[in-house]
Length: 150
Image 1 (cartoon, rainbow, N blue to C red):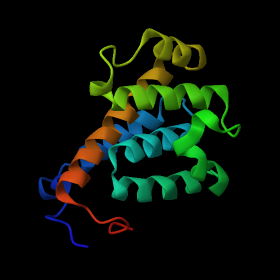
Image 2 (image 1 turned 120 degrees about the vertical axis):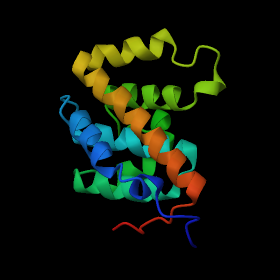
Image 3 (image 1 turned 45 degrees about the horizontal axis):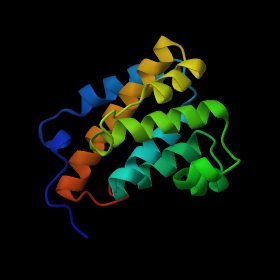
């Protein structure tokens, strides 16, 4: 496997800006494990092998078990996730699959997330979902190689 090009964020020296966004996301009070699960699920949906690779590694560093990582793709049918995690994963799926539903993020999905996360937490989740989708689009378009960055 070989990438089509160096990661565009590296080509244009945008990495420091992206790192600042990550810092902001992790400052919102959402447990890092939930943010990592959200990143992993959106990356699975988008078929981003590089982000699934980095996402599972990040989730393990945050304390996730292999069992839960294997179950992320079937979280609705798994007893391994809390109500807050389920709400975050549902939000991640809706906000990632915007074109799949005329009401892309239904009120029910948003309201359930709002039961578990305050405004700062919701902001963290929405930014994590958006940034993950950004990463996914960069990596899938340029065929970034999983594990190539460490």
